[in-house]
Image (cartoon, rainbow, N blue to C red):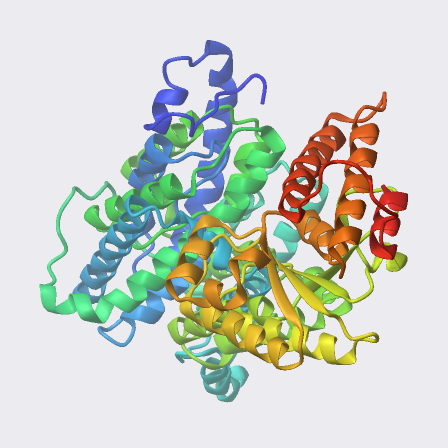
Length: 630
């Protein structure tokens, strides 16, 4: 990345860009910050209502969250301020504990933000950032899609000017239908008109902050026409100023009630942040530290709660706007925080005539981008199993409260991970003529070695997959014609083993031995060898059947000749050939290294067989093939 700082390369990310800040970056960062503020103000007020708190609480949460992420975050483009998904999860957690908008509700919401922040910080300190790898993108796609639908359904009553309540999308729709005849047409015109204008502006003038234009325009129309006098609900008076730091007035007894929601918010905030942050890093260069992101998100949430705000997260729309405006460093977030603070201090009276239908329209347009229909179609076309998992997560959000739906999404992600890991994905190997290294029989079918079955599991063996791998190997042996004499199992991709893996290897050895088939192992990692030795499985298999590489096992199988004299003759002949091949000009360094290892092994074999280094006869058929192929 040229012409911009690289946050995330220092223990304190801000120290990666502050000392070397260039004056030429300032105008880009200021413009980007003002752009973020222009989007944040209307969306923040809407998301505050989505979380069940008054609109002005967005001004309490956003500035400190922006500043905290600017100092601690490792992405220069990501904007952490308010999030529709996190706001709806906050409301889902608090709704059953207090009446929306009450002092108790607001205090519990602030406590939830602090607790979610502390959970996220703890995850980061414990270096659990790699949990991002366990989120199935397909399941998260469905979960976020469902959240967007739920958020949209929750805004429809505002657009229609009616009352409707419900904890789930189905309950909300069921409560809404009997009131549809009460729709206020003027309110509907305001909301639908706002949606239409924003869609047109985003398509025709993508650089224009459509939400801000609609917000200002609807305020102007509301004042000119007197919408409130005609029955259109408006935001009403908003208190000016910013809240000071304070602990929410809830006791420790509320912690167990909030902990589940805090955990869910921490996970969702991280999941929706790490994807865009990594995408920005790939596009512009730099590196995103998942553990640092957890700490930064945690600090932002904790700060928002301490300043009486609500839980926050990242915003893809504001992050994209920040990037398009040319942000060079997180100084753009500092600008956005200052601008938002100035709005809270001096401009809140302007929002009094703002129609609530406009806020609903802003939310609907903002979350529309979270409904990735094209991506769902792609899953249907390419990966039906992942499509159904995404659909399960989507439907879960619509038919049950958000937190249980999140649990289903996480369980579905882990379930898919375990299911994939449990599949017995095996590669069968052989040795192609003219080569020394083993090859995949799917690529070179005629490389199979008669009566030697070489198997390499394509993933680490552990409790979830080792039984299916064992059974698949046995099935392959039974179906093989001719029946193999030796099964060579390559464990290169298994750095360590658990007890079920050891027991499965023991059972495989016993099953093969019952049919007169030997089990050989190659590429035993130190931890695996140690456990096999301590469990006596290595003794049962036989230390002489353990080989450092597959090629050593192939060579040992080729040297299985019945007569001592024939064996000495074959070894001597093959050793002479390898020495001649090693001395050929043009042989690669890797080839020479392999030949030298083979030479050393054959010399030891020859010494053990009592040979004097002089050929006493022709090689066996197997060795003749080896020599010809080399």
